[in-house]
Image 1 (cartoon, rainbow, N blue to C red):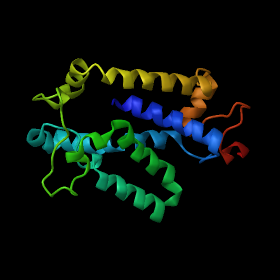
Image 2: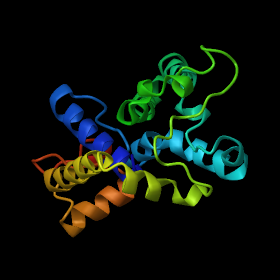
Image 3: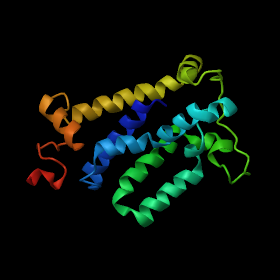
Image 4: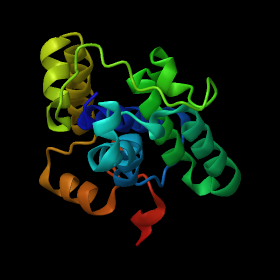
Length: 190
């Protein structure tokens, strides 16, 4: 899945959770976007710097169950104020459906030898062509990306980010406004 779709699905889910579950009214959507792409932000540079030559994959250690459990443990035990960002990080694994790639996802629980992501048609010599090959050879991936565009369009419409003032507020504060125009955080008092 492309990073923009990870972000769009996360923002849409977070917006719904804030509205219907009264969850994390003070969340910064910018940080949620970084967390939602966290595994890629870790693995892609590692692959580019060294591991791609060996494994021919950019889905590495940050896409393992061990890392996701570690993140959950940290945010629920040590940094509870970051829980929503930890859940956004773990949401990446859900959206990538990592359990379908058990040799990578369950490392090291199935042995210390690291097994790479099942490439299924995206094999190439250059890391820069990974998405190109995946999306031209696996058309079923487009459904997830179209869903991401729809989720982002809904989010923009829902929070009226097509209005210049709302968009600027969102960009500079990381917060969205509710239907009644009030911000979802206590920052509105300032």
